[in-house]
Length: 302
Image 1 (cartoon, rainbow, N blue to C red):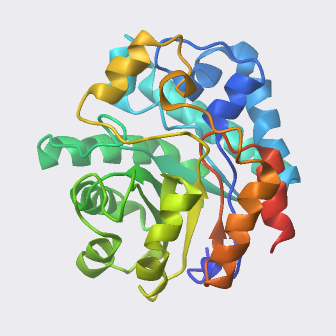
Image 2: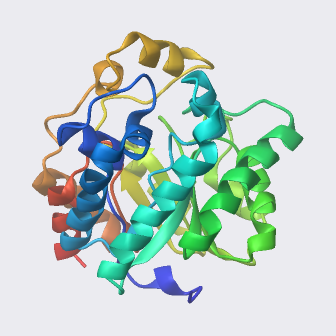
């Protein structure tokens, strides 16, 4: 893969987990999108959802592996399905690429413990979790995507974990609000303190358009391709353990406790994207509650 890929405007896909729920996938504990991998009856739905994002203009699709991290599977008593689920995610994404050879598949490596908070476990354990997931995904992907990570520590460990695969990677850092990651580190800290050998670019992931705008001046001056995966949740700020506590009390749909914004229509979101494009952003995509219609409007701005 050309390491200058994101120097031109490129379109990523949208929010797979919420889209699958909207299309009729039943919730199953806290498995979220992983339920579409666990149950054979949803495999076609998953493939069709990938394909609809591609039809809307996505040039990159991300494996549906946000909830196939070992910790999430352990919480749902199916840790023994770890290899099967990650492999199935790779196979289905690869099938979408076989039908659309022009697109690229990114192997999604999510936070390996809780979501929207730093992973405070031992480095060795975190690195192993990233490595194990990356090893299963590697045969099916073009590059790795570090998905919604909340600390420099996790980003550095993920980069170290994927070194042996010698594939480029895109960083997806998370900022819930303000201009600092949940670890109280800035995006500048990331770029100044990591290796750049296989770096494709940096985006803020699962972030509101308004909060992305607060970080735009800093991001655009980092000297690397940059962009976003915008969400339409009302909030993502969390504390250690609180996300999963709320998730377990819900029916299995995160918008019950994170809220769903009705104001961020495809056209409204595209107004933000146009502004970000004019500031030099080249990586456009959506996260939770962004649908193919949102991606289509982003594509029209390309």
